[in-house]
Image 1 (cartoon, rainbow, N blue to C red):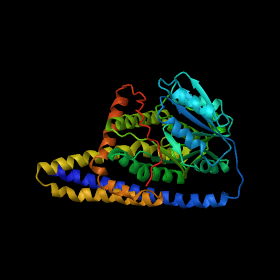
Image 2: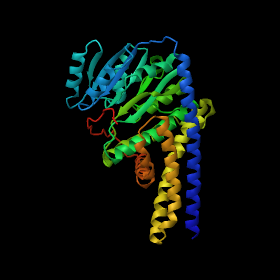
Image 3: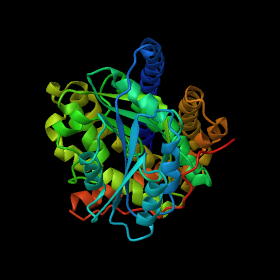
Image 4: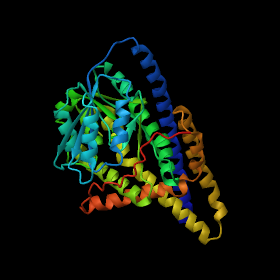
Length: 407
């Protein structure tokens, strides 16, 4: 009885901590939403038209790269070049890219190289770019019409070295991909807005990012020593004093995994790469010299995922215990509390992001399965990292579903 009481107390404490975190994130993200609109109005009359280079690294992206490039050709911001870098693909990616470059020779430059990884392909593109602003996009992603324009706006401030955009899931085809769509909106977007508001955003997604070329040169470009080059470059740029911003109006749609196996491959790589980042930049953690990035963002990234894992473990333990004792009804208050917390932030995020309200119902089942998948991925990645087990990139099988959802 003492153990069960302790578990209930611990779970309630963690849920209250989670609720407090969400409240803080909502306040900060809401403030960011308002201040961003004010900043846009103030900058509206300022003429700013720097040359932009959009780099698309591609490895075995025959099903997605054409849709990606077509979205770039439709950008309202015209002072830009598109650089396609085939990183030694073994499928028909090279031919698809060559065909696109031949069809649009004034807009697209195509390079092919031996396989060296995504960071290598990005650096190759940067070296051959003419723009003052470098925009990166994954070949399985696509931009809406004004995305580049919104990314560029933020660089009117010379202190800004990098800008992240709003990543959304394109293929909302089954329960798993819809759950990821909901997570991107209610989790990742809210979190990034909150951290950007206090100037300690620690990751710009590879699906959509913009960088001052000067800042990229100062940090030596992308590094290949972690599996999350997007997070590494973001922290490196912040580390030398540049501001890292987030623009919710700069929207990219990306193809998400539709099977649990592919989902776990992706998340294990992300989380394993996160451990590499914490080791690489450990000098920043709890170091006031690096401001909020060192005192808030990186410690958060180090601690809070484990709180989520503990909540997941306690959730499963409590369910099994109540079933074994024939007292499943006792679990209902905990479930209602968790579902209410999830639904509150989901509704808030859907309204603020002007998203599909039909995703709201997913908050009622989030804690029943999806959170446990992420907890499992965290434990698997941690096990591999601690025991020195090699983690590869684990490239996902593309579906060719990188299309802007309708309805």
